[in-house]
Image 1 (tube, rainbow, N blue to C red):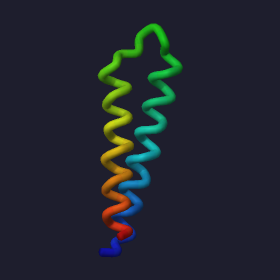
Image 2 (image 1 turned 60 degrees about the vertical axis):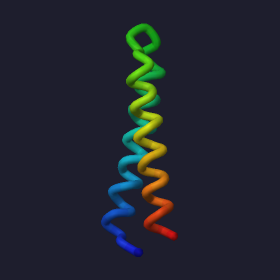
Image 3 (image 1 turned 135 degrees about the vertical axis):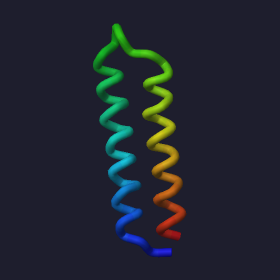
Image 4 (image 1 turned 60 degrees about the horizontal axis):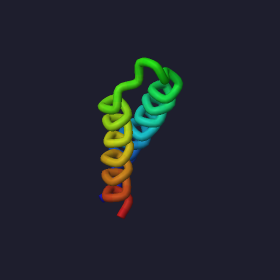
Length: 55
């Protein structure tokens, strides 16, 4: 199923997850493991959904 709007949303989700991860890693003192986990989970979920829409 080809939907450019969905693909754009998933790519933005992946980028948002990456930005959240870099911000969390930059704040070494106040970084919680749940924040890192959420950013990784967002990237994985959006990446998998993007692959599903492409295939």
